[in-house]
Length: 204
Image (cartoon, rainbow, N blue to C red; front, side, top):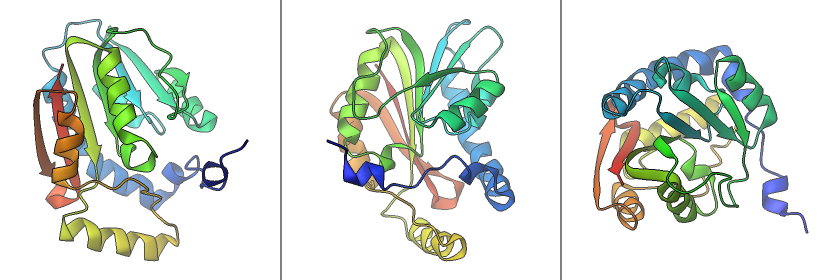
């Protein structure tokens, strides 16, 4: 039976191409890219990198080094096509089912502003833990719903764009710490972009 909630959720395939959003994402993504690069710096050359919920593939295209394999995973075929055009290998995935990857094959995984859009974020973190090799690194970015800066920015964004955020699983620092800590014993949680972005970096 079709899932009525999922069937009525908006597509994000055109969202990244709007001029205002493009400029906003480029600014916000600069710091995110820097954090990911810093934490992936010691991964072996030729690493397999996974971006789950890759969007248009902008971030992983900036993070992957020469020789790395960039695996861009999403359910939206239009976005996957854009990620492919940026040099990534596209992988169509359903967030509510296990990832079509073997255990321990990924060196570095990221899920950037996508976890809050899912119905079962803990299961997704379990899957990311499964596909990471021992010593592999996971980077998670998600909006901080205990930040007054973010809450004000979200309200302004929704008013201007006339579009809801579709954040069905919002996180605070406490809930993100708990969700990541269920699987990973070595991790840190922080904020950047003037409180607009929260992140966790975990090592398996």
